[in-house]
Length: 121
Image (cartoon, rainbow, N blue to C red; front, side):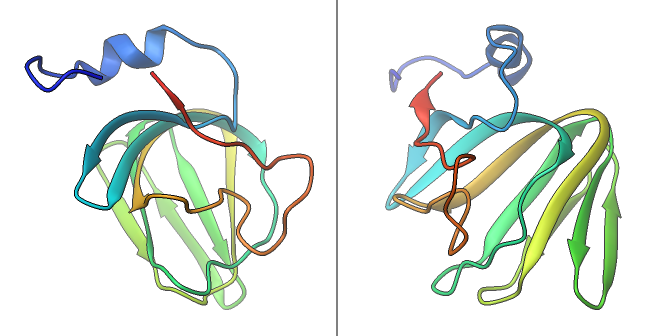
């Protein structure tokens, strides 16, 4: 990541196909900006110490919550408050942008085989 070039999100998304594997595209103070491609259902999990921002770039993303779903289309965002159990789901592939503190584990308290460290895009 260089500081003297604009980040073209569409181009960065075109450079990989793997789903549920976040790519870091920028850092903002102690936060990371990540992109990911999603399809299917993730795992139910919680981030006890941080909120999590989801911005849908393309497709449709459903954030399942225990008290109801939040459905997001392209250009829409939602912040899952810290401590709220959630499970992202996309029927067809969706591309998203995440904004969260450095070191936030994608599977939160659930862990498991879907846990991925973000790599630089």
